Length: 385
Image 1 (tube, rainbow, N blue to C red):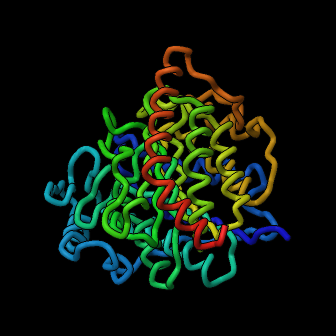
Image 2: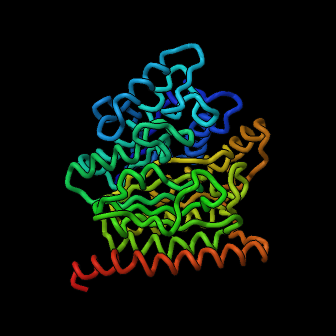
């Protein structure tokens, strides 16, 4: 029987802008939706296209500080430039613009709705394109993120007595989500990302394993520059997949950022749609109720390709490898020449690859020593294996 799926999307996304010079472009959502539409993915039987509701203040208060929310609302209503660096508002990364609060509530509301759909409405998978704001902290905006939608949704799932695995494959470490559940053994957070040694947000090392009851439930695989498809799949296969399978959560939440791709302007990884698709297929095979959210990605065509592939995988649809001609014409007018949806497996240059391989093998060894005895040992024992 095909999975029951929901794509959460709003035409209101187009009402907002971080500014012409900001790397985050709202157009990414419109472009992804358009590519899905041209492939016929917005009219699939058993797949619903649902509007994106706004999160309420009560929703936000399950994680965020009330004084921070008040300042966010205040700045959102102002026409003149505003800044409050205590709350991370008004700097280059986190600009203040009219309607900011409404924009943030829109993305957060979509992820909360996705969580509701898989726990209350019988959906197997729900995908919120405008989610994935994994850098937002309780009382501070960070990394283009104002409200942490994943934390809000996971808190709602925890209130239902459910255990959650959170997987983050964005190029940037999911620091805000890790921080929120660092001392919890009911949430397993796994992040595969570019190393924080030289890269924002400067966190996400193997030594960050959780504290108290949460020791062993925070897992990080930092990849050094030029890690390619094979190394990305290795990190997933040898760390993320076995830990998630052993933990056997009630709900899987994934952040599906596309800024890991080799042509992204802000990152130095060399991932392609080849390994991205591989990971998505293995996640779907777990048959765990799945809440998926968007995330990073600063090459607009990469984002559209990645999330179209994700939605295709979620619905069991094999897509042609070439982009539809009308879509090629659209992106050509934007200065892009890509004609392919799917990439062949990419290998980095030999010297770069050897350095990246050494680094990922050291990370995996450290995780196997510190994390595996806790997660694999505990849940294998609980299942009687």
